[in-house]
Length: 156
Image: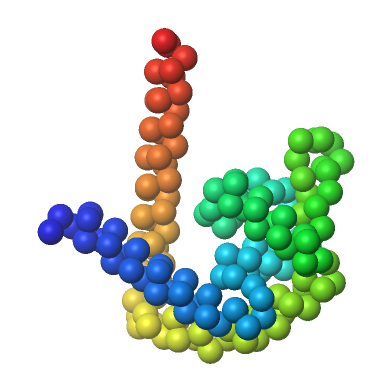
């Protein structure tokens, strides 16, 4: 098996396993794993533009927008126009959203500890560094590839 393919399949399997477990953990609270991610990002830094949430969540704009619409309907977030850029939307946690995020963090503590314990302490920095490197490398190649295709389209 090609090493890159093997790594991609292992990363996919690890992600899907984590995602399924998180889905089960948060389902009783009426929240998905992806919603939890956005609530947690907002708990760390409230009042950010949607595009920043897209970048920080490693998700795509359409998915983030759809999740934010649902969270807003549930009264967990509020979205307002940016004061200087009418196209941008600022996202804020409501007090209800902040309380739920804290509860979900408490409920997921054992899950996060189990995930952390799956990597031996002496390998932690190396594993995290490798995962960050994979994300950055693939992201950079994807960005370069998009810009080349846009240039080709403009040349036509």
